[in-house]
Image 1 (tube, helix red, strand yellow):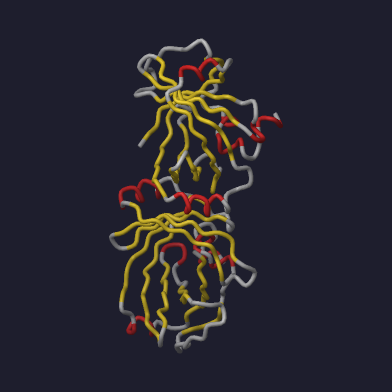
Image 2 (cartoon, rainbow over the protein chains, first blue to last red):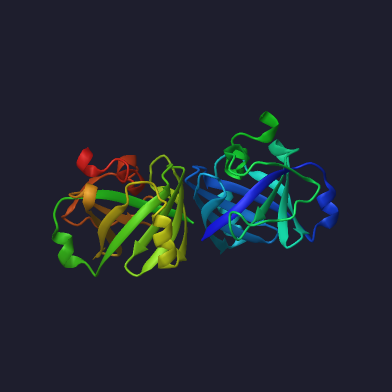
Length: 155
Length: 155
């Protein structure tokens, strides 16, 4: 499938009070090449292997393929991932007709908070909550695949 | 799981008459880093995603994880793989208590024929058929992940 997403920085923690779900995510990458990333993710009690292709020029559309895998398999695969595993807490925050996924990063990316919204088309309108900051859609340094190698606290 | 394998060149096509199975394999790689290769394979009517870790020093043991996936998914994933898709015909050839997998390569690797045997332990004995040539276990240039980038006909 093709994913259409926009990504923003976050300016306050007000989203926490509006969240309907909060879960810990630990993930690593078997490949961080931007044209074919391969991600291993443990999210609460489930695990997934996800392949993402190259973005379009605007950075809004990207091929994505995902398969659920057993958690013990994911743990084995994490052990051979590239150095720099990502540890974050994700909040699902409904705003108007959409749900923002807000990721608070820990470890070497402590202090970084990013919100993503999935859209049905590139020009779909959506409500912007007051905690939504600067747009960073398509900026490669905010890709999770890059945050392992070049973490936020080193910028 | 950990895979124990030895790999050999092949000196004649006599194995063809001893084969119990012959099937076409088309495969590509989402990652060819020898510490974490990610392979997409279509084998006859099935498809698989396979992750392999680093070998031990002798090249005989390697972490391997595999999951069957739908063929249309594999076709989509092949389209974003690294350039250099591998096209080969595999023969399963029983010899004594073991089965050799003999791969005849086509395309840019035309002329290369390699036989692999899976063993229960590194020092397990096995019968050597007369068509078995020089051992190439652990030689990285014979890894399928390398044959896409640096094919046999260019050696």
